[in-house]
Amino acid sequence: MSKLSLDRILQSQGFGTRKYCRSLIEDGEVAIGDEVIDNYRATFDTDGLEFTIFDETWRYREHVYIVLNKPANFECSRKPSHHPGVLTLLPEQFTWRDLQPVGRLDHDTTGMLLMSDDGPFIHAQTSPKRHIPKVYVAATHDPVTPELVAQLLGGVQLHDEPAPLAAQTCRMLAPHELEIVLEQGKYHQVKRMLAAAGNHCAALRRVAIGELTLESLGLEEGEWAYLEPEKLALLRPSSD
Image (cartoon, rainbow, N blue to C red; front, side):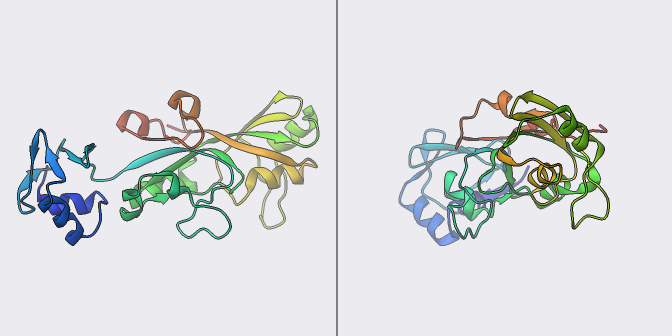
C-alpha cells in the first residue's frame, strides 16, 4: 500500500502529463466516491482505490495486464508502418502508460494477444526458457493429412535454424484446418513450419496461451479485458 497525491495517481494511470492531470482535478473532473476532489495535492491510499474521470470509473492499478482478441490487419507495434497499431483498439491512457505487446502476432494473424506495462512480466512471458505453450488454429491451403501432422510433430528444418523445430502437439480439426501447439515462439513459426512441410498457411489464429483460452474469455474480435490474478495464474509453463 502506498499513499500518493491525486495528480501523481492520475499521471501514473496514463491520464496525461502532471500539468494536465492537475488541470483535470482543478476543473472538478475527478471524483472519489461521490465527492469531487479539486485539490491535486490531496493524498490517497492507492490500494483498491477507485476514481471517476468524466463520469467513467477506474481502479488504480500499479501495472496493467491486458488480453486483446486481435483482429486481422492490425500491427503489434507502437510505431506501425502499414496498418493501424493494436493500441488504437484500447483506451488512450494505455499508450501513455507505455503498454507493450507481449510478443507479436503478424498483422494478418488473429486471436489472443497479451499486453502489459510490466517489464519483468513481459520478459518472463517471452523467455524461451519458460516453455509456455501457445495454441494456434491454422487454416491450410492444401488438405491436412496424417503425413503432414507427423512431419510437424517430428520436426521440420527451417533455413535459419540450427536444428529442426517440432510442434508440442498437433492434430487435424477439419480437412483444411489443424491445431498446433508450440513453445518456441520463433518468427512466423507456424507459417514457416507449414511451408517447410509442403503446405501453406491460409489463415492463423492464436486461441490459447498456457491454460488461458480465448474461448473462456468470451471476447469478440477487437474486444479486450483486464487479466486479474486468477487469469494471470493460467499463463503458466507446460512443466508447471
